Amino acid sequence: MDFVIEKGNIVNCNTDAIVLPANELLKEGSGTSNAIFSAAGRKKLSEECKRIGKCETGMSVPTPGYKLPAKYIIHAVVPKWIDGEHNEYELLSSAYLSALNVAEKMKCASITFPLLSSGNNGFDRGLALNIAVESIKSFNAQYLKDIRLIVYTEEIAVFVKSQGLDVVDSEYDQKREKKQNERKAYFEQILDKGKEVFKEKAIDVLQLAIQEGVDYMKDPENIKKMIDAGRKIANKVLKK
Image 1: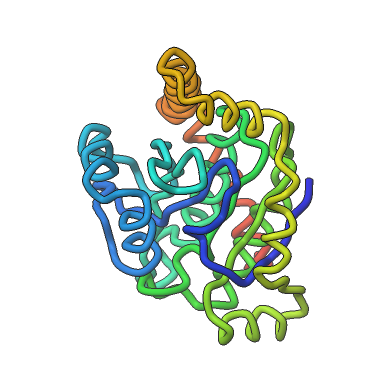
Image 2: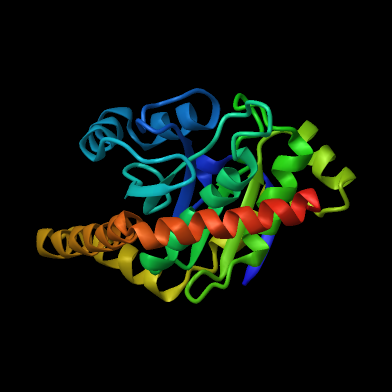
């Protein structure tokens, strides 16, 4: 599994999935959420989120990527910082782990995260970064080969580097875009042919994959696994 931290814009990433920091009602928010809704096509994405209805904090649900380069958007419902006594750490870790598990169920080869909960949700940036890195590195991937954590501003990139971590710039992303995995190449090929029968087949493939991700997160046992794993990672970060 290849994990990198990159400076860039998440809406331009052509990984199989990108992660949107969501609220429980899956409504458009500010910052990264606003940027993704706008780039994907606000009307269709909002309609799909309204159809799904709700997702618990720490859990994730997938939708199509619509106009984005990414095929899927995984809406990871992130916690807001209160006081550190309301399971914020484990729920943040669980948000990463649930998004990764949903991506695995959909057989994604690549995924891009923003630094969840580090902006308007009020988490300490250092803790948010540590939880992100530990959560991603702990994940045992079968299909996911390319996992990225993207930072938008130079200020955050400098902070990440100050924590002893490497940050690559957008040129790295551009080079990686040339190396499409076979599944993505096939998907794009049948779309480019422009024949309705192939388009319908491609859409069916997307919807089946999305349903796999939805069904995975409906299982209470899977939800429990995410929370338990998130708690272990949070305790590791906090050195409890």
